[in-house]
Image 1 (cartoon, helix red, strand yellow):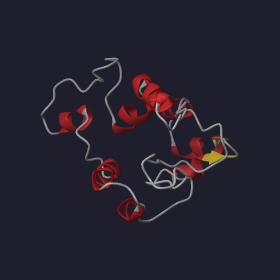
Image 2 (cartoon, helix red, strand yellow):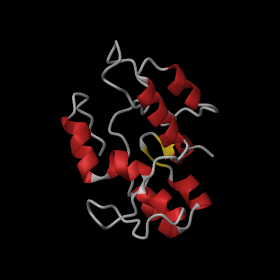
Image 3 (tube, helix red, strand yellow):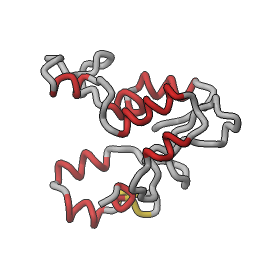
Image 4 (cartoon, helix red, strand yellow):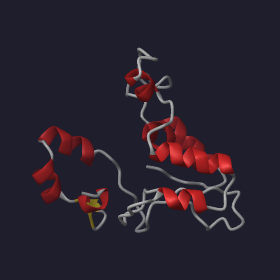
Amino acid sequence: MYVCQLINNGKWNAEVLNHFFTQGEQNEIQNIPLSMYDTANVWSWHFTKDERQALSIGLSTEPSHEPWKSVWQASVPPKIKNFGWRVMHNGVPVRENLGKRGLCEDVRCPVCGEEVELIMRLLVICDEARHIWYYSPLRLDTV
């Protein structure tokens, strides 16, 4: 199952959620905000030659079997390719990952202290990350 199958016309697909998830899981999923725009989600780097050229790393609503290939073929610096690959393979040392390896006792976000620090929380969901994206040259609203 792909995440895109959980979304129908910009809204959570209640029928699919009911089939695959418990009520608690459904509530959590439905608390995840969906894009206000009818476009595929992409991550982009403003240092590319063309700012519209985006680095798609598997967040698109269209299923892709090997999204990491687009990371390595992107026209961005190698360190950005490496970071994108690490994000896609859950290899960023966020507290959740450090906790699984016994390297961190407190897996909560060091900024808010309320939620587990996950990669997507660190990069997109956290209020601080949202402000950084919004005030960056990309002017992204991740709500």
